[in-house]
Amino acid sequence: MEVKILITWNTELHMERLYMRKMNVSDSPSLFKIWSDPDVTEFMNVSSFTEERQAKDLIKLLDELSQDNKAIRYSIIEKGSNEIIGSCGFNYLDFEHAKAEIGYDIAKTSWGRGYATEAIQSLLNYGFSTLELNRIEAKVEPENVNSAKVLQKLNFTFEGTLRQYEKINGIFNDLTMYSKLRSDA
Image (tube, rainbow, N blue to C red; front, side, top):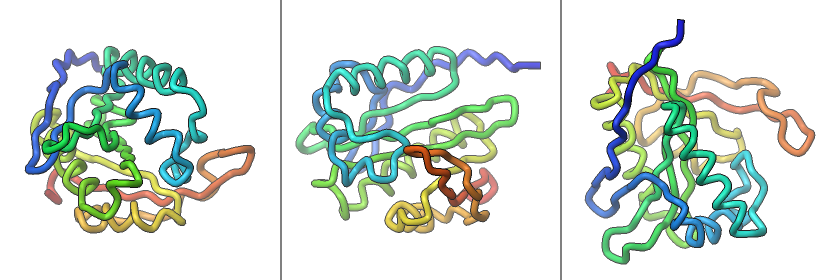
């Protein structure tokens, strides 16, 4: 039996240096710059974008998923500059089992400043307190050492390797699974 929950998405999440708001089509020029960088998309399940239209299409798809309570994506904005520096959100929501999968990306110019950690912590707080999730998980390519470090800093538990879990460019790749439970928080 499918559980149907009506969600009024929190349109903004505020942190010390950042805020996040639900992604919208007007963000496409900024997000295109980020998603067209091969260093940013290296470990994402999309190829680097070549046209801004691709960013618009992805934002529209994510908006449709949020209307069905299946996913939600936020643009990450630096408070001082009001510049979009990335995105993060719940790639998959399963309210029947009170769990979600998160994903995130940060512009290369903003790497190394702790922005991913700050944004994900806000997402965790929202997921556990407002959405009443029990489990939040992240799947990471084993070579994506920086992403794994962010999750470890946030006290996610490494659960193991999902062998040949995802097919990218015709090749089956392993993913590592990390999770955090509400009782871990």
